[in-house]
Amino acid sequence: MGFVLPAELATRLRAARSIGVITGAGISAESGIPTYRGKGGIYDDPEQGDRTIEALSAPTLRTDPDRAWQAIAKIAGAASGAQPNAAHHALVEIERKVERFVLLTQNVDGFHAAAGTRNLIDIHGDTFKLLCMKCGRRGDLSREPDIEPCIQTIVATGKAPRCECGGTIRPDVVFFGEMLPEAKVQRLHDEFYHRVPDVVISVGTSNMFPYIVQPVLIAAQQGRLTVEINPEETEISGYVAYHLKAKAGEALTAIAAAL
Ligand code: OAD
Image (cartoon, rainbow, N blue to C red; front, top):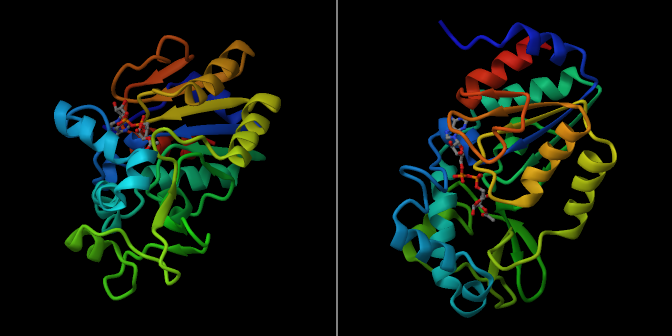
């Protein structure tokens, strides 16, 4: 038998007028994308993991963009042949069914936008969106091999893409040591702190960052319904009303069906 939502949770979800969702790498695991932490994750091997974190840092991007891009290419390369899964699609259906919906994601794979989520705060950016560090021109990293700059060329050559102006192109994502984009932080505060949603659901994240944990804790403190979807325990598991130890796809499909 498939996943069954607790009856009381289904009833409480149906009464909700606003839902806020927070996602991490676990939601894309069923699309075949490796997570960051845990077995088989990008940071899994201690030595290699630390090197990846160093490569994905602001100083490396400045001094050795080829090295930074080799690490980015691994992440973007995994996402380039993959598709959004049942969990991403269920969130689009949930957005259609409630009066107010907001989705805060840490993921840079672009799957929530591709699936059709409208009110999206991609707080860490999107690897497939590009920005020239010299002239500021914006563009897209192509998933197609015949459109430049494409992920396949970067994987093959290990070279950072260059802009027509000669500048180095970077992905529009937050690197280690960089500030979060102010406008997105402002939206996060507005959607999760000033107008606390009736329900806050955290999905597939190891909850490493305070700005990911806080919206859940504030909702719990204010008596809102809080749900975590994660097969493992995390820092927030003891604070949420329901910890669904399930995969994102099955749990979110059940929630969308219950609304
Ligand atoms: P992590 O890799 O740290 O955590 C993934 C979580 O997903 C774990 O808690 C898993 O138990 C859970 N998980 C795995 N498969 C799942 C499934 N099918 N359904 C539900 N949950 C599942 O990923 P994040 O928490 O997203 O930052 O990592 C946060 C940030 O750390 C990333 O955005 C990235 C990284 O450094 C930047 O790139 C700035």
